[in-house]
Image (cartoon, rainbow, N blue to C red; front, side):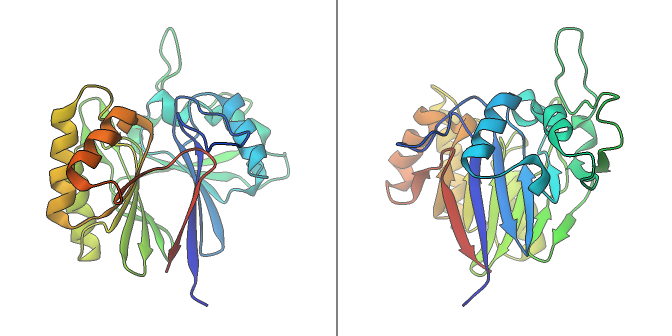
Length: 256
């Protein structure tokens, strides 16, 4: 039997029907690969993250690391509570993120990874600059700049090619495709996550569809900031079978 990686959506605007998973604004994925478990994002609100983790029979202690794609609140709002919920005897949690994602504490709200004194000593900060190998089949891309910050994507080295897990694609989908292709000698074969299309943005949806067509990526599992309207628009160009929803409570499996 071949080795496998699984990706479970734990926080998204949509939730799997007929389950107790809650849909709420934000993004978080659980990646199980190489005998390790990575949380990618924490969503916007800690109570929804904690609820959905409990529905998946997971706790804050089970993760070998946390990675955050960028510093927007819907990707890191649950950070402090996640750290605080780990038991005092748990190992320090390695936290990987672009430099721009850290310590963005505003006058009105915290927007970014911000740890208070109560969480100090419970995590280790790892700034992401270039490609960062997390395990044999899992890596974080370089921090790709966009207006207001930088974003990295998660990549699983699957048996049929790279599987990209993306928060929002703020730097642009073509830039993400190019950096993945440069490292793995082929473009993404599967794309999971958000494209920052939202409502009434047919132009961006059509541009993304063209990028996927050009690079030959035919397995898309879209959610978060793609929005229902964006996903439906992508189906106009790419077809119903290649563009699927991926909501909280759903799991995908990939051969390695």
